[in-house]
Length: 214
Image (cartoon, one colour):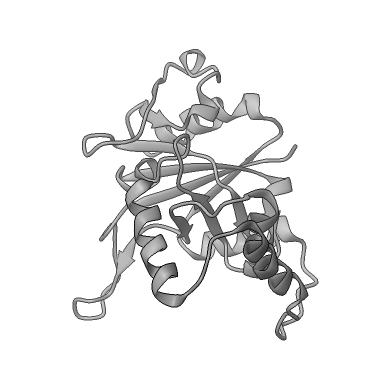
């Protein structure tokens, strides 16, 4: 982070800006008071809408009633897809009963040889079926970007209506912006060659989302 702070300090100095708390609060106040732009009507149920849009983005979606059911749901998905029962995961899932599902799950960032990565999500955006993740010590982006299969776990209380609500949630809950904010809308894809959609071009071939109902 020191290199990042040094770079930002040089930019602030060149612009004649400071990084004091009063100035940061002035910026936050401006954002809070700034009127939101016009948006389309959104009277739909956020959970149903998120599921619908995620499926349209080529993700697959499952629902469980509690966090304790997550290992069983993930093991079932991997077996159905004929995928290995080995994965890496974020620390928040370290205490789940993976062994009870005959799974081997390591708590560490993914590397190039890992085939399955299990992550959470800061929130999910119903309007587009998008997952929003933040980089950090306990939320390494590699776990969602490197494996061929990305499995994301998100609670219904973290599903918000649109992008505006997602950024508002981030500003309210995070005193400092993370190094990176990633948006995941289904598997990686490209149509650069002859306008033919190819999955897994720059990231996972599969994105599977497990929604926890409570």
